[in-house]
Amino acid sequence: MRVIDVSGVGAAAVFLIKGKSNILFEAGMAYAADLMVEKIRRELDGGKVDAVLLSHSHYDHVAGLPAVRKAWPEVKVYASERAKEILTKPSALSTIRNLSRIAAGAAGMSWAQDYRDEDLRVDVVLNDGETVQLGDHKVFAFETLGHTKCSLSYIVDNELMLCSESVGVLGPSGGYMPAFLVDYKGARESIIKSRNYHVKDIILNHYGFVNEEDKPRIWDIMMEKLESSKNRMVRIMKECASDEEALKMMESVFHEKVDKKEQPDEAFDINALSMMKTLRRQFPEEFEEQHCI
Image (tube, helix red, strand yellow):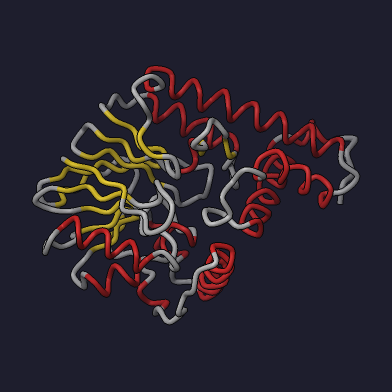
């Protein structure tokens, strides 16, 4: 098995897993899709993409699908049942298109916006604990809720773990992006669950391969960063005069050094507001005397 980063723009957005059958992990952004397809074509040299594994249904993971389907019409897309449902909703498809437009503008890149919404679809549903044979690759799927309610992680050929964002997002220079949009407690469970699978290599979403030095402690590292980010966000929310003020502070703490081509400010703000709601819902005792609106 050979694994190559084929992100159209930036790095660690899309990975190609080669073999007699070829699998993509994620499909990337719409504005980067043509460049991604070019990289894949060069790497496969006449071969085809057989399958796409989606970790979840957010725009920066699915909006490249139409370009992949155009290049390889027989490709099959795998994801959770909930992801399949979301990608049939007009409101979700509209949000994906709008955020794709904003991302293209933030990256300073053009995007024709002419893809078909119906190409953002899941062909095959995978359930928690299900194994599927994709050509010469055996793929095991397991739920890792927390970032979304539709998040899956995968293990390929019993040796490579492809993680969803629920376990957290490391930055290239030691930074960290909290990602527990809908369920902080679920994110903790996802880290614990991932720890129980012993694999040779681990790819963290938006980061890439975990290096050999960090691998023995990676789940301790991710748990420590999750808990510290939660504590930092709670402090910010309790100190703020309003949610708007808290959001600005969180931007400076968690998003200031993030490449806007990877995540525009608008996308971070949506995620941060969701995490704030999650913390208030799951830890009401922390906010009994706090009245931000």
